[in-house]
Image (cartoon, rainbow, N blue to C red; front, side, top):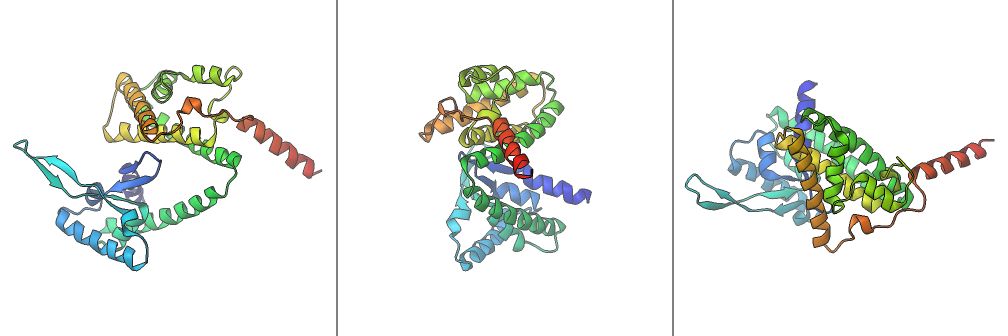
Length: 276
């Protein structure tokens, strides 16, 4: 069971999120986790997976996106190497067409099959939610994300968590701390700012949270100063992406009229009265 957990964690560790919060995997990184030593052989597997995708009448280019990059050699010469940005479904097809003798392939088949199905259900359900329901959903994800981020930051040496989290907020909100955000929103003392965000603002913060944790783990960042610096940089990078895409800055997004705590109390009251 430990081995399964270890490999499942590996698939999550190499997961990336684009500027729209859509997850993807790089083929070169997946190649390593799936224990393929040669790119040539792994590319054959990718080719089979692309054929399977096409035979299912699904757009190959949406799931297998070319991501060629330049790589430096020992003599500082740069050469172009092939790579792909893969959707979760693409990873599933690659696992299905991989070398079945490899134990890690069997693990990948199970992992991506289950996760792909879960993702499909989540996306379908999410599109049908009201704005308040989306807020509850996103808030639950940020709560879980912050818990996981705190565990990672603690291992990296963080002791002052207020300063750590404010570093991320400052990057994303153009210098604003959590207190600044609360004051701008007109919140009471110690009222949760995340409970007073719309779904779009929550999604931006979730992206900040997940990307910071991924960066801390991947680069094995240690020390409170470097960890805070990383959180700030991730927040700022996300802000720059929002600006580049012509999006609304987080501080300019409207604050919902009711906090999630108020909505929760209202729902509980309605439920209580209906049971009388």
